[in-house]
Structures are given as C-alpha cells and as structure tokens.
Length: 155
Image 1 (cartoon, helix red, strand yellow):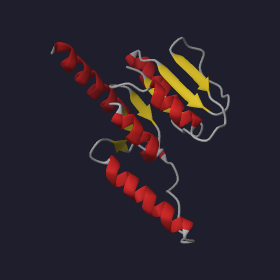
Image 2 (cartoon, rainbow, N blue to C red):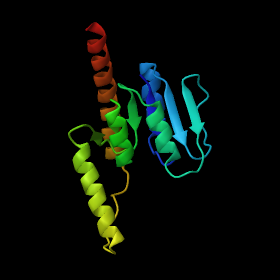
Image 3 (cartoon, one colour):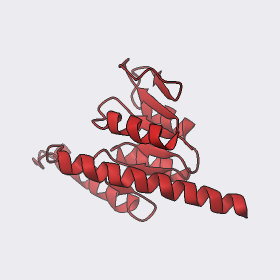
C-alpha cells in the first residue's frame, strides 16, 4: 500500500507525510513542477511534463488496489477508483464507487453552466475543519485499505 498525492496544489502534503510516517507507508507525490519534499527514503517526488493531464495519467499508472490517492480532481478520482484505490480530497471528501457518479455529474453540470456564461462561484476557502476532516478520513482510509488487504490475503 502507498499514498499517491496529486501534489501541485495540494494543501495537505505535511499531513500526508506525518500520517504516512506513523503507518510506515511510502508516499509518491506527482507534480508538473519541482517542489521541496522531506528527505526520506519513503517520500518520492515524480515530476512529469507539463502536458495536460500528465500528472493524472501518471497517478493512474501508479495506482493499485488498496492504495490511497489524495486528489480533488474528480475525473482522476474516478479512474483511480476503477483500479481499486481509495480516493479522498484535501478537504476530506471521500470518493468511492457510490459517490463518484454524482460527483462527475455535478462537475460536468457546473462546467457546462460556466461554459454558458453562468457564474457558479467557487468552493469555500480551505480551513482548519477541512484539514481535520482530511486527517480523519486519511486515517480511516488507511485502516480500511489494510483491513481489505488482510481479508483478501486470508482468502
């Protein structure tokens, strides 16, 4: 199991590092540009080209069943869920097989409305509650992935 992070605009990288260290999990950050990462054998940065969706494509390529992916990109979340990964946004929203369809429809609808000139507003600012919710879901996701892994290994 590993944690994959859509890293370019991720505001919870420090939280990911702390939780990953506590659970002895490797972290792979995928970004379009270089960034500072902790000096650690368990944290790796992959810088991909600036091609549109290059980071998303690399994350999907690396994702495996039981991994945890951190991204607010809904189409990326859908692709990772299809591979059996657990996905959560930096704001602590958990995407799964049940919720991803609604999230994709809502995203597409809002994109259509914006394309037609309607001002739909943006998301509320990231705050402490979001950070706390993210940490709770990250812990729960790791426990769920480990539980799933141990059940499938026992079969």
